[in-house]
Image (cartoon, rainbow, N blue to C red):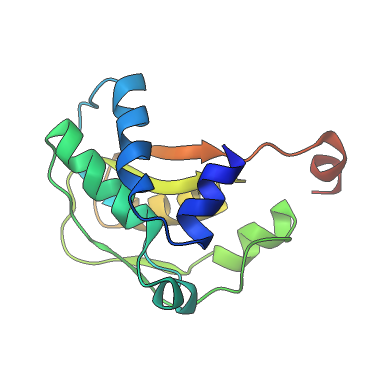
Length: 154
């Protein structure tokens, strides 16, 4: 999966979002929620890429599952890059960096492209719960697997 995710995120192969969504939709049943949301752009990297992988994936899943896509999440600040940070540093880096605007449904799916430590998804879900969400499920295309050595440092 690593080469596929790298091609999608770092080398601009946007069509892979459709393939990633198809894999998810064929693996998971359509969730019983009111809507989908996505972890918002992280600032300069998305602008440099010209697209946002989590948003692309959420748009494709919205079509597959016939669920509305909402965009209630924003950033309060641009965190530094997560790559290379420990679990504690990642949590600290994204804490309080998301805000939710407007009303959100009581149940929704939060979409992100890659789940590494869950820090970003957790912080984003907290922002959604502050404005009314009661159940936030998280769906990602890939899960980063950490070695025992790196997890012991976290």
